[in-house]
Length: 98
Image 1 (cartoon, rainbow, N blue to C red):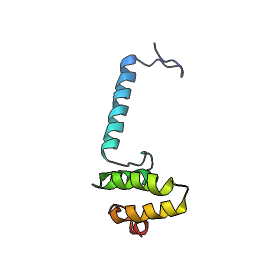
Image 2: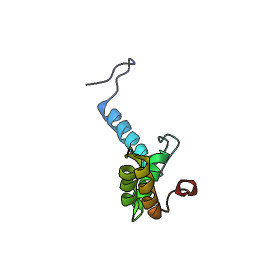
Image 3: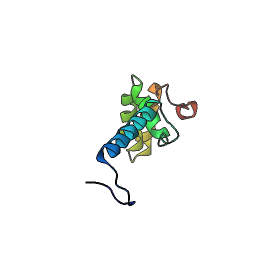
Image 4: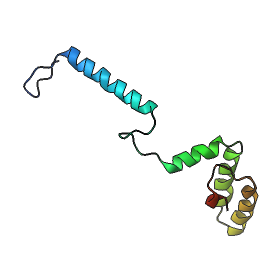
């Protein structure tokens, strides 16, 4: 099928060539990190990736969610916070490690 929306016929070979160039540009931009047209980086996702890259990060994250954030009893949550605070991943900023 030939595109004639603007009145001029476009050849399929031309469209295919332009598509290949566009994909190559996208691939080049993605290799260079967060380019001007790239979506903004999510700080929360970067923190999670950092926590999970720590040797004790998964244990800390699960312990925090299950032991501190989830319990209804504040005494239980406080006790569990005291336990997980001994292994806070070094990746977290200082104000999250206090």
